[in-house]
Length: 437
Image 1 (tube, one colour):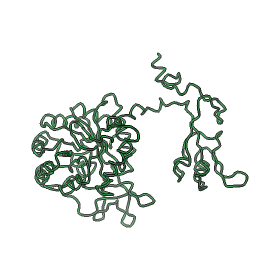
Image 2: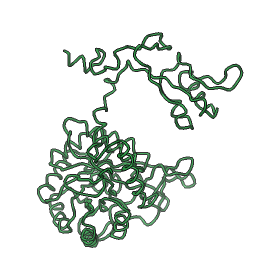
Image 3: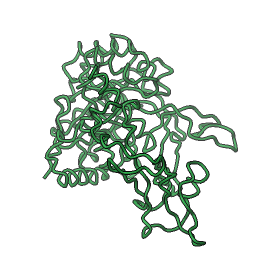
């Protein structure tokens, strides 16, 4: 049976599934329930400095984007860091860690960008027995207006500075949580590494307004007639998160830097994709808020079963396996050719493939043959764009079939380059030409 035990920068947990810093990890009650359900670790909801607690809104805190079936695709929140007293959180963290010594417990922290503020809170967190700290440089709303959160995460020099302070004043592993609200995610990751961080986690939420109430003309969620931008998360942000994780994993300057992957993880397959692109573990929030803590059981079983079926014995067999196959566009094999194929037995004759191709693509799919409604790909017109695959409502009804070397491409009338399969040494590959020169 696959071994799901995880060791992330020395922080051990029985599986790679952690709960991210968010409402589900705001108190001992929630965290105890999460551990009983099977979560391998939690990042406690972000702690602030000693003093008056943060005040959250008492009205709506979430806005949403739904699919046609009312399935939650994206969640926007305007909630701030914990509004509970610092010492209450610290006492509960200590007790939970004593009760669950085999689970990972990491403290998320956000205090002003001043050395003394970090120096003061770190010993308090360390005394709880927490396994590590996560520096919240990602929150895009509320706290960023106060010079914290993404206001720090968007300035690499600040990131490096704060990380250095934390490495100086604590023995605990330091995980730096990065904001996606930046042009090039590699720059803050490089800064965190330069400061000595043990790992990075990403992505935090994305700046967003998900909708507008057209009765009172205010953004949702609306609080007393007004709304604010918030942080966007959920399945819809997964593609953005995967790309940013891959960018750090394949950047020569951050290569080998441990990554905790966050962003839209809902199923075991999502988790496996993050691991394949270089994440050492994953953090989940929206899925737990949507379906409850027991969703982790499906994630654990699904990942384990898939690993068994594929012969992967441990997480190390998966982590980073897809990174070498992430390429810049200029290095893609332009000699590779694929054509769409429609399974006539599976086709329900809805015509969506024809309409999409006819109106917006390359007019490569018929809708009639001999006066009968029939959808078939005309290879001589097909450019292999796979739009039809993506609009077809029947899974695997339309597939892409690659032409073999030496086959005739009916669209161009040319024979497929018999050497295209050896792309690593092909003369049309810019990397191969450079190596030869």
